[in-house]
Length: 289
Image (cartoon, rainbow, N blue to C red; front, top):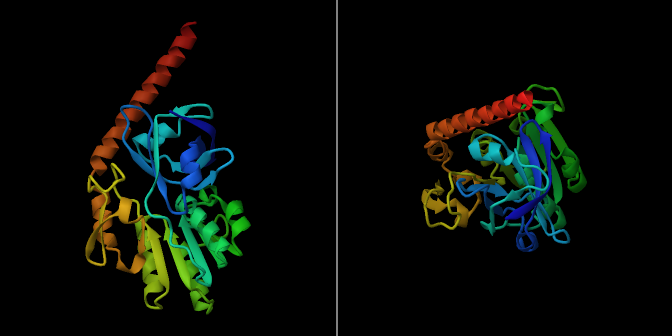
């Protein structure tokens, strides 16, 4: 059992956790992830380590409630416990002094891009960050990015904050302005990562994406996280999660990620109905008192 030292929503349905796992906090590197299990009947869910505190013995994860397990996880509070936290898993980000490095985070992808942006800055890069959200409310870690990046650009789909448009449009704007860009990291929804890859492909700008496919054991044994990169099969949990964006088969990745969509929707529906029923019964009991 692993204690939650801190839990707070930082955006609608997006929650930040600090979890007490000293060994993982000590060993983790940028780009790596953990697999958590909320309880004995729960599924295993991969979540990127956004930060760590060796003195406290904690790691930070940021969770968007989109399915049954992530919704269940986001109901936990400070002082609660998580059954399993396994890691650090995956290969660390490849870090070197590229020159000018741009980190792009779409939505909760910003939480995954953040630790690599920190490492890129420590390696001596001039760091630029482009972070986006559907609206102002969904923009996360802006202040944290400003602490480690030389420039930060915020975009919103609806124009409610910062640049009105997508992160890819802001990237293209920088490129069109003849800004020097030597390296791009893009993390977020598959269509966004694919779009970034297309923007940088013609200019042959080194571009890396972090993939988040269906994953079960995190050790390469189950084969659930298969993806195609450079026309070869890879297992994202052990070969990645970061890959050359110009070699990823995004169409196949998206199709595979939809494999269990109906099952996921049914599980979420059942969990939501059960939770609402529990709340209703609790309210009725209080009324009767």
